[in-house]
Image 1 (cartoon, rainbow, N blue to C red):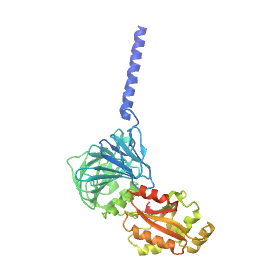
Image 2 (image 1 turned 90 degrees about the horizontal axis):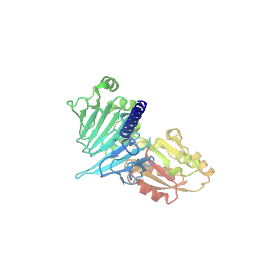
Image 3 (image 1 turned 90 degrees about the vertical axis):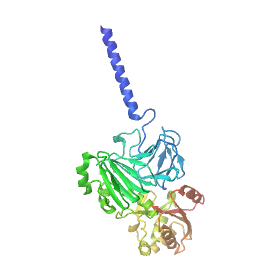
Image 4 (image 1 turned 45 degrees about the vertical axis):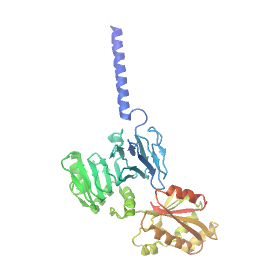
Length: 398
């Protein structure tokens, strides 16, 4: 009798152990680590790259069990792989169809999984708790379906921005071009459309009352982009929408008119030159007030990143005497040759770059070579310029 009880206890313990293993296996998606927030690919044909210069993006280029650092060169993503970025990162994915190329931009700290012909905020294999609190994407020319917790979106247009805010279980849809058809998850018979230049949101039934108080209008109602500014700020998605605005501006399409819709910045590539006095001198040579009057429609750079610091350009005075003194102290009494490179995808930035170069050349203390780049060819352009061993000053989105 005692042996039978011990045997039953052993069988029970073994059954519990197997049950625990099955649950762990299901939660982790089987062998290998669970996918991280990012873009997950479950069909071949998708490629990914880092979009921009100063962020990190990883992708499953070899297997689903690991991610590799991506550059601005396109890399194929393996079946069931994914792409993820750091807190400042922007990823770009594309897939060719017979009549078009679908492009998906995934912004800072966002997640977007691609499941067959659909895109979802939670990559396959993650749980609700494993998804980020907010996800922001911009879809260009994509005839696919976006699946979020509160609603699914079908695209009839070419440029649509989506924010899913999980804390309130809402999905905000902003159409810059074309029409987006939204089907609420809890009310699939209440389909509504979002037209160009307008925005609307969907919400789960559980959070409908809170959402109406948060936005100030009911779900499914189209409003101007301006009425979404407050909610975007409250959702802490300003930086993500500024990144989307940079792309929309390059296409000449309606942007969200944030108080500062686009933020530009200057920085030395890889913190060149090492002497900080050269950086301060360069800033002192540039009269931002004058340039702002010459180019009223181009946002002036507001930040300068150098040596691990972010300087507020607007707080540093135009002071050519101090600039020359600093260069003398740093050991550059004659002309210092540099490159000034600018992002040609941002309208108006070419004219501003040439004007900044003239400011730096005015007192014969800098020799400035100008070069353009865009986020897609940046890797090759900067590799060529770095081979010259000259300091490289970058004017781009921040």
